[in-house]
Length: 246
Ligand code: ADP
Image (cartoon, protein in one colour):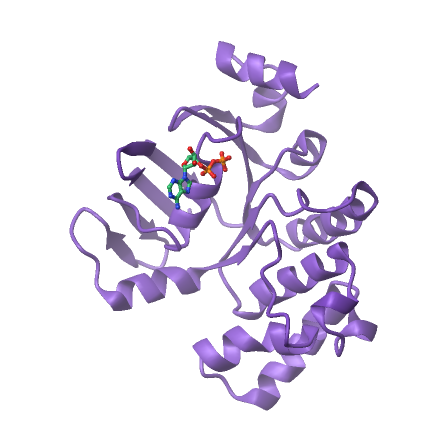
């Protein structure tokens, strides 16, 4: 088990979005998170990376690192938790005045204080890996949405995270650009990256995921292999959701 999360709660003011979730992610597994709009999928992902602070819950990592939000965690623990995972956002979130290469180098150089020359080599190889070797000196506005998202993926990989988090990585893309991004994600899955992906692409989830979480109303309603959850769900709410997605 790479990470085990217990009793995760998150509220925004009066609105309780995550009502106690237990999640385990095995090393090398791909978890697809599905569920209706507003059910808390993005919030869950952001809590896993402490972009949102959970109100309650504890994280246990395979290397012995534990952090609990049941009391106030230390700044150091939050930073350590953040560095465990790399986030790929719906809307890419690239720095507009930096080139693709500079965007990918930013995390390791500024946050992790790594040596620039070394980081440059890593960033170049990651941009090549996502098929952008020729475009690394272009700015985001000179790239298509699919290319910008591939820069986003290279940037998340650059901090060498143990877990990759994808928040609906293709939802902002024109349909003809979705395939190139899904292909890169599929390659990462084949390489053995541990990933959690919020997605509406059920066919993709079926192909790539080892495990599917269906969430609704702040709870994990049902989870299991894609063959069960997507093809043969037990819960009425899962069936209704899948029917609507057809
Ligand atoms: P999903 O990803 O499943 O569509 P979200 O996690 O984005 O759902 O949102 C779940 C609920 O939390 C929604 O009702 C949303 O309006 C609310 N929410 C999300 N982020 C915030 C925030 N920063 N402040 C207040 N409410 C939020």
